[in-house]
Each structure stands twice: as C-alpha cells, then as structure tokens.
Image (tube, rainbow, N blue to C red; front, side):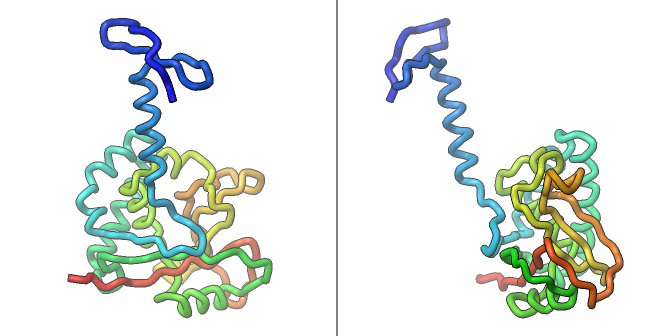
Length: 216
C-alpha cells in the first residue's frame, strides 16, 4: 500500500510506499507494468514442450528485425541468421510446418553417444532439432516478449548446451551458458562440428522437436 504524499511539478505526484520510500507515481506505474509484462512472458523451460507458431513469427518479422538491429552488431548478425533459416523453412514446409514444439530433456550424469541422443529425440518426438528450428525458437521467444539483448549478450539461464542435428548431418550445440567454461554462453550461441555417431558425450542434453497439426 502507498499514500499520496504531495504534488511535485505540474504532472508529477509523489507517493509514499509502506516502507517509507517516496517515489514518483508515474515511475511506480512504469515499474509495475514492466514487471507484469515480464511475468507473463512464455519462457523456454526444461522438460516442457515449447510452442513455435510460424504464423506469429511471419506477422512480426519487421518487429523482430527492428529489435535485432537495436541490439547492435550481434543482434544484426542474428537477424541475418534468421533470414537464412526463414528462407529454408519457407522452401521446406513439410519439414517446418506452421506449428512446431521443442523439448529440452532433463540433464543426466549418464554418458551417451550422439546416436543414443538422436534416438531419444525420435522416441519422444519427431527427431532432434536442427539449426533452423533453433532459430525459429529464438524468433518465437522474441515474439513472446524476450529481449534480443538477453539472447545475444547475456549468459543463458539454462545451464546445459543442447545437442542438435544440422541439416547436413553434422552435430551441433545450441545455447546453454556457463560463465566458467565458455566465452559466449548466450542463448543464441550455435555452432557445428563433425562427430562420429559412436562418440560419447556428457554435459549436454538432447533437444527434440515434434510437428503439430493445425486444428481448424
């Protein structure tokens, strides 16, 4: 609770909070709106299906581009990545329908091979995510209200990298920040390398996807 304390300038009203602090009412309202918006953001979580709606992404492309450019060189580079991925998705609608869900598996201390991780993704969904789905996921997160700065400049709040399968068959890692182990542990971090399917790994989690039918 707070009480109106006194009028400051023409359009400024100061209020006193329950803890005794005095703040401008307009600033208090802006802070509340910001916190309310952040609370309502649909965020990516471990062991929960995350919905990607490509129709929403397509309707908001200009806004996504604007936000990426406002984030500086890293944001601009991310937008250029988005453009390539969107083009691939548009040219391959059978692989990238308008509704896709992604799933980050919970971390296990058990060492698994690349093939075993791919098999897990086949068991719970339609396979392992590729680089295009990763970019679609990031675009959807921007549409949901996440800041581009948080995606390209700050460490990922999800601690483990997600293993993905690139379209060319190579293995890749996506996101998963760890300030102690890498220089670029941002949510948008994406890189690929050649790895034998029998190679075992620990410290990463499989990243699965499944296609959803559009209900008319």
